[in-house]
Length: 511
Ligand SMILES: Nc1ncnc2c1ncn2[C@@H]1O[C@H](COP(=O)(O)OP(=O)(O)OP(=O)(O)O)[C@@H](O)[C@H]1O
Ligand SMILES: C[C@@](O)(CCOP(=O)(O)O)CC(=O)O
Image (cartoon, rainbow, N blue to C red; front, side, top):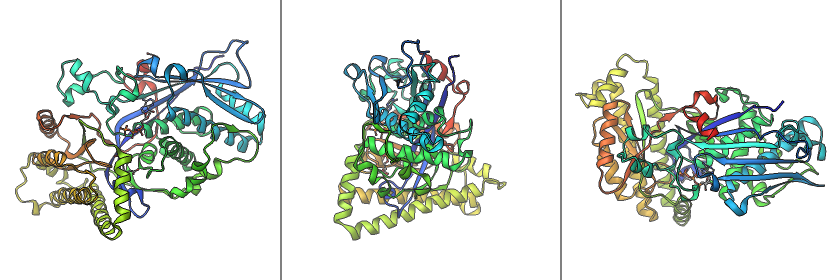
């Protein structure tokens, strides 16, 4: 009986609200907010194998990026076993080119799966390799795995789609675009919006593969309820793969939020991955001891995730600004300046970290006031700026302190820009964010993550009138092209999906 079993797991996008650059060092933390816009990975079995093609030592994997042109966005791999290794080769690279994030995710996740099969079944070598292939081919009844990856529209600029529909770059227009809308050009020629597509892709694909191959068990609904070892393994495997594919060990805040959702993140020690980064291999050894699992054992990872969320009644609203940011180049220049100016940069880092942690504390205090009788009314009045005397109202005082702290953080970012020569908050962004902050209901804002011209965020009162004010200012802004995203904050990380619960997903998977 051919199995129609399908595993769909999604990961949220990310916004590093505070802690850019500092979060690269374990001494400092970052406030990372997961977005409502998500990245989906679906794993099922390819059509049934005819007796001539079914094999216990080979399998096929096809991966399709469902919203991109199929002829340039479907990668096919063949997996085979020889005397001392499992090999994964792409078979259509000459036609569509390669996708290193997909290839590395498949290879390393299958390598983890093989090592887990050895550890759990006591089988090794060819026997364990055959067990892996049996799971990939549904007991030989299928040729292998059929994978489709899909991102919510927010991950990629929709400017062209909006102009093709003669629609203005406004929130209402974005809502009229079909979910997982087809994009005209391949990924490499598509503008991304800074939500962390690669981290969400890697994380959701690792989780869906490990789950489909029965290596981890992630219950439907809220995987956060699953055992920490399962989620912890998904986290460490995804962090390793993302670093390998990016060719550097970043802070990992983006993978952490793709797994755990919104939280205060303190990075893992980069040295944990050194043994694996130095001799990355391109096959899966089936002789000798496990080499991945001892390093990716979650109990050996020292990152910290402190729970944190935005308070009820406030909303994160995001915009994609017309030019991107070369994050690796920004990071390189800032860290070079920091190394050359240790005293000045230490003082700056400590001052900025205090402001970042003050922001966390104030937002958490706001969460603590959600049950107060005056909370909702105060938020409503702040939205229309009809509060006369802030001093009389503790919630209003807190919001005013959040506003001040966001300005303080931006001041430190401008100081970092001035001293390092890296335009973290460029003058054009300063002008735009200051103009937004003048609007009633806007608490504050800033440039997320590495900054530059990539994106901007605002913290606003979550009311239609405030959203409309911001939307209007952005759509009329002349100095830069500012396009809103639909994303809001969300608290959840990895999620096992029911295809019928996600609008447009079934159609996009079978398109
Ligand atoms: N839908 C997708 N399907 C397959 N691969 C994708 C998809 N989206 C992104 N990728 C992969 O991720 C790579 C982008 O990773 P990169 O680290 O350069 O950007 P990023 O920092 O994640 O971007 P952003 O934060 O703007 O989304 C692409 O080159 C591609 O290999
Ligand atoms: C600059 C840095 O601290 C944050 C980059 O954030 P983003 O990719 O610009 O959202 C780099 C990192 O944390 O890996």
